[in-house]
Image 1 (tube, one colour):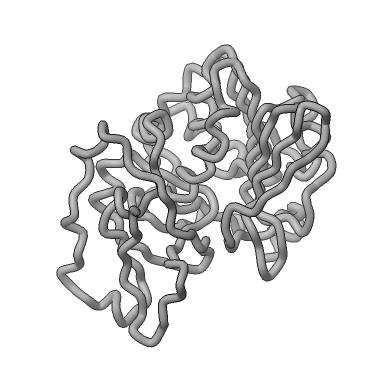
Image 2 (cartoon, rainbow, N blue to C red):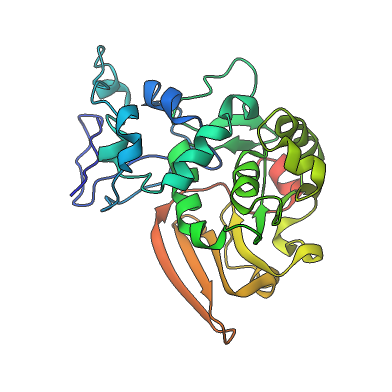
Length: 295
């Protein structure tokens, strides 16, 4: 069984389910990520259980076990170190790995920040871009609903990184829609996408970013085969359920202090099935004013 190796503060005990840290909104080309996998700034984190996933054979050349720290200060600071993406068990999909290789995360983070660290980064307006492994997790959970020609909604699209990944997966015959309630972030995300491999899709119109309250979804292009929500809702917003297509899937963190990443499937008869993928910690899905006030 693949295992997650990590360093924890010596004062902490490791529970039966090994814990990893991650964050809202992020991912990079894998070669550079694997070379910069030291986890820092653990102010928004996701607890991931061990999985049975394995890295595709095509990625074996990207994997090494040379991630042990030369400086063991991380034992004292509480920073975590992922020694191997194979042992980490996050990426098991060839398609997801190819998309994450194609969309360069460096184009979506603020200048001067370490683009390929598996860590959240502040992007202004009390928002963050999350760690690559959480984006990989969400992409894989939604992969069957991100096929060519399908429609996907990204609520809280932030820097535009994950929306660009969705757009590549559904292709020019599909539709990827990002909704962001901070106009400045929406504007900057469009600029980011224009510099990325998803630029042609933005120009052709199959990828679009909109300013609005994501809790209301974006009815114009509904129903959606896939919906991703990048912030934690106290309960599942009904407009998002209404805009999810029968046969579609939504991934959304739900809860306040204690949160779970929920996987919601709408059955062909319109009934809803819900399961918890893992315990997480996301920033809240709230109003623009509340976010700007620091929630």
